[in-house]
Length: 133
Image (cartoon, rainbow, N blue to C red; front, side):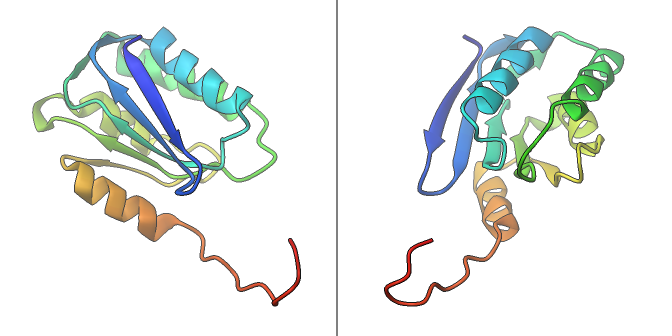
């Protein structure tokens, strides 16, 4: 599979790592897996620095139109792409397309992407002792 994913429930983070040629079907599979797992609210870090997209900006825009139609019971988590500077055009296009106000950015460093995702995380409210959520 060109996009492998690892889920970190403590950090509420999904890490996707791409390899080789990435198709729209690969993006659709990744998205379907996230939706089916009920993790649309998690932050997503997708490392595509060593990949080549096999789709056009127009095909990507059509895909985003479909994504907007997916109902979300919770706000969508932020999305950070890590992309090689010479091949980040489609990642930047995807990040620039609004999906329910979900923040998205493209980075050339995984460390910068992780830092930004941590900054996007909603603050945890303090619980009263002895009370369960």
